[in-house]
Image (cartoon, rainbow, N blue to C red):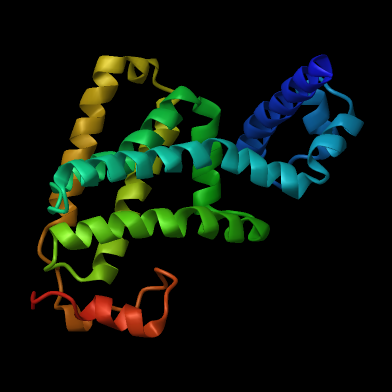
Length: 237
């Protein structure tokens, strides 16, 4: 029984690794289950047995590395909050907790960084629900921490700036695989510190326009009343 479980686990991981490579390079529509099975060097029946459908395999490929990275983000943030005993956290610490796990995961799994960037920029329609389920509660925890530390910045603007930050991380990540020098641990830590500093500078700056002139952003997904309260927070004009 244990031998079969081990073989099933190995087959499943080979399929996920193959899917990460092919879906990242060619997209959902550019890859078929037969091609995935050939890339993973398993039979087509095994692909169907383990995942049932291409959609299910695609979704699990996306979530496989994102779940632990997001869990690590929250773990780091909660640990920092516990150590602070309810006091507002330094902005740099919040941003480091938010960025570091994804940054490290992208460096460790070069194929995933391409796949992640593709899906955060242009996800297939069926993936939206999975992205929302995984990201919305995670981002909400960081927005709450930022609001405590930056009470003068409207909540909707914090969401927009967090989107800017993640966009910068993704644009950086797609270049990493082409630059072997970015695989050096000491240099990576220096890059991460520079990234955190850059994000902190923007995220805590005064709004460029009065809060009353900010557009109604399509995020976060929350009731209109809560959105209105978020937009009224802050005294910048």
